[in-house]
Image 1 (cartoon, rainbow, N blue to C red):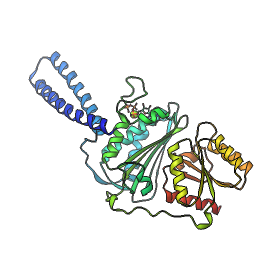
Image 2: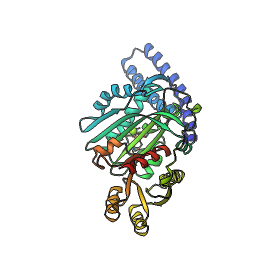
Image 3: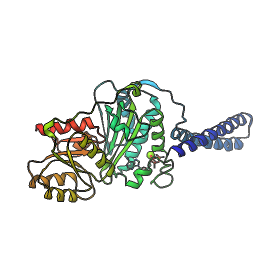
Image 4: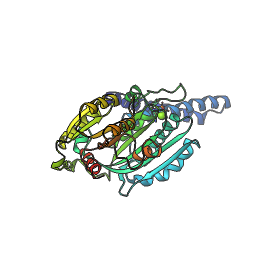
Length: 371
Ligand SMILES: Nc1ncnc2c1ncn2[C@@H]1O[C@H](COP(=O)(O)OP(=O)(O)OP(=O)(O)O)[C@@H](O)[C@H]1O
Ligand SMILES: [Mg+2]
């Protein structure tokens, strides 16, 4: 992706210069030509250079070569004032909910470019919900700790403003998810998508020093999370967040981790070991049930909600019948609101939102035991 970015960015840059020369000369010709028919021909040519400039703009954004004009911006305010335009763009069939949590959601970003990115995400969401649905935009402060940052090259630990755009649409297959940021990757019919929307968003977020992630489940929906550095502070200078260890009486408790994504399973397992738990893991609900039947001493079930095959919720219900005392903590890539409102989970259920940090996991596990 890095290499494609450099190549496209460079190409787009040169191409933009050529377009500038072409359109500038067309403009001067237009002033000199009096024949109305020739005027029309010139206008058509000018229209095409405008389209070309739009395209190179998107490619420049992907290649992180777009001139950005970062200003200290309240991102909560930006989202709420922009939501009216988004509402009009997505039409009546899609309901829009925005949640701005707390203050201090300030970041050093290029406002219009961020609006552009939000528009792209909203359009994708609309397209993914042809018969309507719910679009949620949430703004919140988050701290990405050292453990989380380590999983991604170039990501620094520190304070971020999280903007999560979640829909209840078709979702993406793994293949689509893998390629979604690639320029010109589209699953839409010709003329309906150029495949540049997400690449533009990706480039913009990276160029702004942020981080972007996709969570998606086929048939359930998609959540795109933008992490933008908060307040333009030098995030590098922040010390890594201290890892909270579980109190000693929790040691030797066993947690069963269930997730169909190996990466999540591995991270959660490592975090739990770090916190002093013993860990078992399973890739789906059936495998998990077998482990539970064979092991009488599993205390906590940490499970994904949406998985191929049986869902995390079905699993928890089955577990509850067999081992009523076992605690259940759900983890999901969807933001809490979206999940609760879509009725996938009941309120009062323990839930941790992916991506989570070791500290957050520790807190959730503690809260679990207090119930
Ligand atoms: N919210 C979403 N739900 C489901 N699939 C999505 C979503 N967002 C993106 N995709 C998938 O990722 C692909 C790439 O998205 P991207 O925005 O880059 O291009 P596009 O929407 O196809 O075209 P363009 O944005 O240039 O008009 C889409 O074609 C679609 O398959
Ligand atoms: Mg798009």
